[in-house]
Length: 364
Image: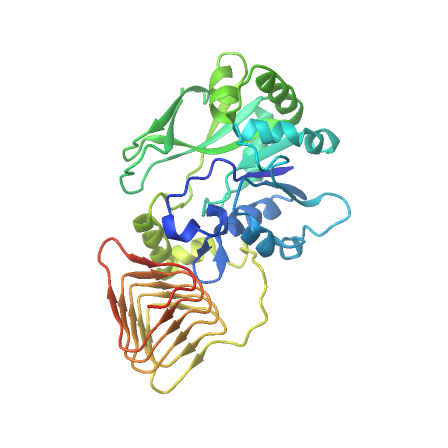
């Protein structure tokens, strides 16, 4: 079974997470960040997926619906969205919520559980990880990756030390990683019965943090193996890194490594017309989603579904999310607009290495 753990999300995307959880943030023109995780599950034939939410989950519920687009609207297994049982009480940690929904694990016929966050944009083969997990007869397998992102301003990453035998011997919580440091991706494969036993034991001892109290505290008691993920994955921990992670998809070779025909990234289907380009439009090196109307100039930008760029407007190095409208003569450079933003005629909005973010449904 698959578990998407949204309980430990951090609001480092600021305005983009005012009204939604991190996993629900739009990405790369037509996706949400959670689409990549769900698609990885589907390619691994995971037919039962639980999404553990914490707050601001209306958007994720609307996006996922019945799970049809991910083949999860089924009689056996399927998609389960599991919000807090007591939303008015402060959640002590992810193990608290796992314990509150422990029957979900107990009733499943699966013997192996994959636990992962919902905001990792990557193409990862969980089948290969499960094979290694079973080959080593591991209790827990921790997926890690060598850090290759920009410097993080806050300690949100966890270092991972793996010995020559592939065993995880230490986890350094909340670090500032440097390039080539091994970073825990907070993604795990674990035996279901070990998981249930440890959830009960930790909660009985008032311990509620999965990584700290279940994994790190048991490195000397359980067989905890490491699996190095070597594929592409943008480390997103700020508005700047989010902008860069999106812009990387303007590189055809990089985008194809995620979005090839053999490994489809599934998302919610919206039946909209193709993008429409007028005779006054000029578009270069950009991703334009369906339903858009382009009359102005778009350069090095990502334009989501249903966006209108009016005549004489210029959009450069920017991310324009769903159903926004850029008025005539407006000029945008290094800007991220959330959904349904209205930029008035002749307005100039220009950022730099730190893009300017415009909140949802704002008029500027």
